[in-house]
Length: 391
Image (cartoon, rainbow, N blue to C red; front, side, top):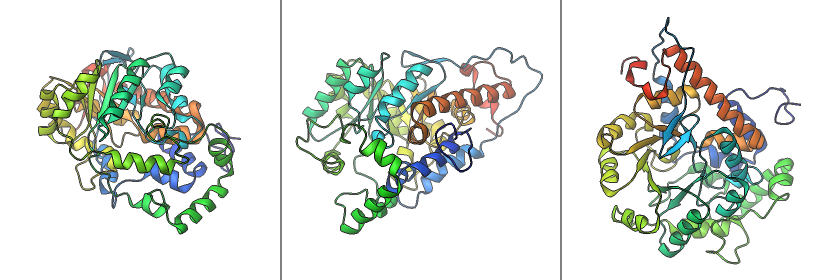
């Protein structure tokens, strides 16, 4: 028996990619591919990881690295390491009440958790299960009144940071989801294949689909009264993405939100500068994990231009392809204030629940500690390009 259940190899996951393998084994294919996949031919998805991997670190020796500081302050909050569990839609379909499990793991470890608009667990359910303030992610919806209600609910739950995702004016074409019947409407063949795959994953079926509360989007139940399936909610959600959004809408957000505002989905330096001018407190350099426009730059290649464009006026966060503490170090060295983990915690919770999410955080902490020591740096605040070769 392995740490997270039965395994033919009886191995304990040691890295984020090990958790990915466990998630692939445990999840129905359409759910695993929903986490794992990207847009079109997934070239940007691959570039996010490959470009991070191609950056070489500058190893230094004979330096006193006996006291290493990994903690930092981001958007006024203390972080044990410069990591945030980023928003992941449909999280509660990967494990029973997964958003609650991830939020608890993040709180116990000492980093923020960000609740997605399209989470299975509601804002209130996560708040009831935790005591530390968490972040809330919002899409600009056609129904502005419902978005305003979501902001009010998040504020009432104690959320202090609103993450406004702006790169979903239209939904990217994700071939894996189409092939697996994750799109709406689902044809007869897609339904049959989904049913067969669910039968093959009895443990998931018992624990998640049948063993907990109904799998509906907890934050949207008031918007779609009487809906009986995730497909009903997805139909509503897809119709709510607003292609008319402009920077003027940030002022509307400010009217209804008194906390910090983060703009997520920025790749271009001009957009980063516009976000700063429009009153954002931070941006997230993100291409939605390669799930929107295929063929865009990797986030690590876009990061330096964004950092330069904002010129220290606002904080710069980063996501896309982060699979280890070494990746965290590389992003920090290129100017990020912290990184967001998405797939990393989604794979972990799918494979092993709260304990696995906690293990991922501890693993990244250890990897970051080792990498800093071997690069001769003792404080994350001191990370810069000097730790990278050829930069």
